[in-house]
Image (cartoon, rainbow, N blue to C red; front, side, top):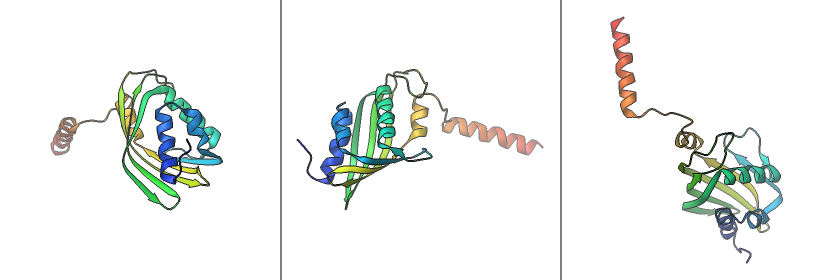
Length: 157
């Protein structure tokens, strides 16, 4: 069944990815689709976005989008929420960790003639790297310790 409203089209796209129905998800993209992703120097074509999506979903199984907000603004649909999944496949040369990840996400999708033609995506990449153990972010106790050590060194001079 084909979704009817722009909101339905966008939500069906994310649900199809969560359901691992990639063919249906891709059928909701225009041939001239373009994606602007945070951290990517250039927009991705439909083919490049498909490759990125397939590699991400191969690495992270049981993915689920949970949207706390869905805002319709003309031909643009804004979705804000979280994405959860389990890291069970290789991701950018990182072997599977088995970790369950939870990312804050925000998307803006533009719909034209019943299909998504443009996408802007923002995800918490630093949080992802931290959850996978790639990036170490010190907690409050370590910051306090480091500040204390720095203060001692500054005032001993």
